[in-house]
Length: 88
Ligand code: FES
Image (cartoon, rainbow, N blue to C red; front, top):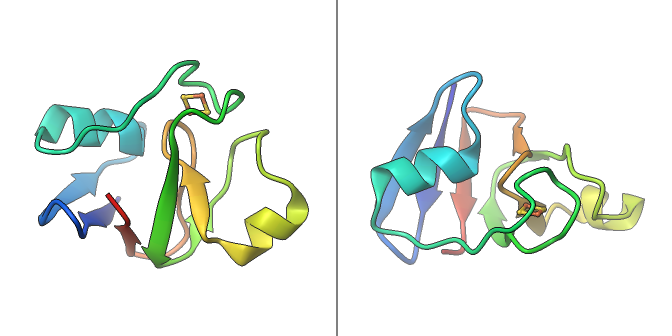
């Protein structure tokens, strides 16, 4: 599990194994993330990353974007470390 802090919204959500960041955020409420495919292929849920290391599991970003770690697809991607800070 890891924590996702939504800096602009002022909420922090715990993401358990087997639950997507997107689902955890939707369940918590208080933050809106647009989504479409929910399978890491469309790019709709792209979200800015302010801190932490995303574990990219989408097929949208290229290698340079993955390495930069400035955005992530929250429908499928997770966190390598214990905490991510998102720009939402
Ligand atoms: Fe399509 Fe996340 S909703 S990539």
